[in-house]
Image (cartoon, rainbow, N blue to C red; front, side, top):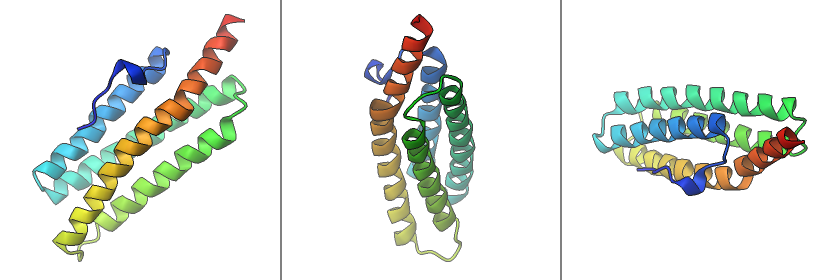
Length: 138
């Protein structure tokens, strides 16, 4: 499971509340994996992808609104994640894969979700939040 901690907080409620929801959705994928229900994993994958795209769109709108100078690299990080998760989803939903390959894909997804999310929040989102707070204080 992926746990939200105060260390991940950006200090901006709209970002933090969406990140908490993202963690909830990631944990739903992990729960579906634990019960080994391919249909449930597939539907939670779709649910996660939909939310990720919505969340990234919201963040990117704020980057444009606040003329954030790190927008291109931040957006590239978002694009990387969406492509990786979408590729894993596509491969997972292939009906003719073995159980062993399915388990490998789930493990790859879990590592991606945990490592990428935590690193992205620390290395990108906290910097965005700081820039927004600084512009709002001017």
